[in-house]
Amino acid sequence: MKAKRTGILLVAAVCAAALLLWGGWSLATNGIGDKTANAPYNGHGGTFKNTLAEIDTPDPSIVYANGYYYMTFTHNGADIMVMKSRTLDFRQAERKVVWYPPPDTMYSSGIWAPEIQHLQGRWYIYFAADDGANENHRMYALEADTEDPMGDYTFKGQVTDETNRWAIDGLAVEHENKLYFVWSGWEGDVNIRQNTYIAPMSDPLTISGPRVLLSEPDLEWEQAGGPPFINEGQAILKKDGRLFIVYSGAGSWTPFYSLGMLALAPGGDPLDPSAWTKSAQPLLQMDEEAEVYGPGHNTFVASPDGTEHWIVYHATSGYTDGWNNRKARAQKIEWNEDGTPHFGKPLSLDTAIPNPAGSGVFRAEHANAASGKLEFDLIPSSVETEAPLLIHYRNPAGASRSLDIWVNGDQAGTAALPATEADAPGYAYAFVPLQSGHNNIGFPLADDGLQVEAVEIPRYEAESAQAESMAATADHPHASGSGIAQIEGGKGTALRFAQVNVPVPGTYRLGLAVSNPSGSDAALDIKVDGGKKRSLAIPATERNQYIVAAVEMKLKSGTNVITLENATGRLNLDYIDITR
Image (cartoon, rainbow, N blue to C red; front, side, top):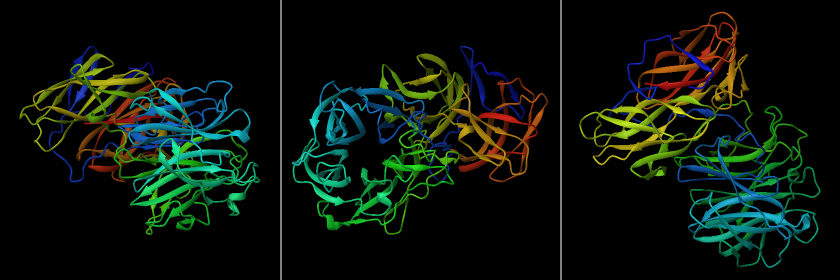
């Protein structure tokens, strides 16, 4: 275990699961078998907080494919980077610069707003670039050499219409089996206004007809901070056959940068300007109370289970930040009765946001099956730790089975998997050692009907919970995740963990990693869904010494809310692990 975990205190009955020893590591497993809830289990849930990365990520473009999120963004205007993550949290993502521009060309500088797209069976990245002079910005494209978005790309040249005028923020649109290109451009050769243009494409690299003007920045809110006046950062949103172009208006260097929308009439021709309706007011804009400024240049991405639409945009935290401190943020899209999207207000950095549906469930179809093992890669951990593992499996053989668990190439223990019905999943919990960085978790491939269908790490980071009243969160360099939560006595002071999901109802072990450097013993109340409180004793610890204080509580299948409150003294909480 990591150095700061110097002791373990169990304050409730020891979990009923068997303790299995391997190589000095203790693994607790409990097969739940075929007892399934009425509603399908869709992952342990949890929450996150903006921003999505610790580095500046302006002009984000995100796709979800084959179990991973991929993001590109304006990376200092100097190259094109792609990041790969199991979740929307890109702080521990794999990162790779997939293309460096050659020197002394018309596309060697000012590399802006790369857009990653999967079109007609290939990966493409569109980007704007120039030779050091802004008036020479044009659109260019890379084509992937393989099916891997993190692999090599080949530069395919300029993507342009017959006018060959200033162009940025381009991307392709597939609609009713036809392909189009949408971008931000100048009418002439002078930087007066940026308009929204569309043109037909014969393939992902070729514009095959004249450009059509869809929108000029003629609304008052679009002209804030200008001239020049702005329509840029176009993004495509589709639902139930409807097509929307969401774009950014107002000066990107101002806090007034906002999102507007063009809606195509059902059955309308995308090349017919009269078929588009422009929203009179922005759909997302500055919110001083939430301290969100310049929300714009967005992208859209599905939840891992495909049931939700999410908007990802960049914004700053300061009124005068301008082009500095632009980081990607996300929130779920709701839908109006007329079929149009509703973004709501931008969320503050201290708002706990329920994770996208299906997040954190790493499925076997997205794992690597080779050399006799099923291996799940890119499992992140910010520190060396012992973490909970939830295994989804099927074992219809009629008898309990043992399953070896491998972590980073070493056998780390064995899990007991009780029998399941043929059409029902089972669930087993274990603890596994994770190193700082990316981890691989693997299992032997069985040939007798035993199947591992998915794995999860059911750890709920305290810094992602909702802090109320005198509770607060803070960055911490040695914490699991990115930080800790601080909670102390006071009316209304609480730390609330929302969207805590378990596969079946029953008694679960809640293991709280907590530090109490006050010099005297303390206590903390825990309740589930507003029910009866349980008091948890927390002994005094050294500074930055964390113990695991555990309590058993009943959880219902589906969503639970766990609240920590009425602390005596000041306590620091790293995470809660939930096992059975």
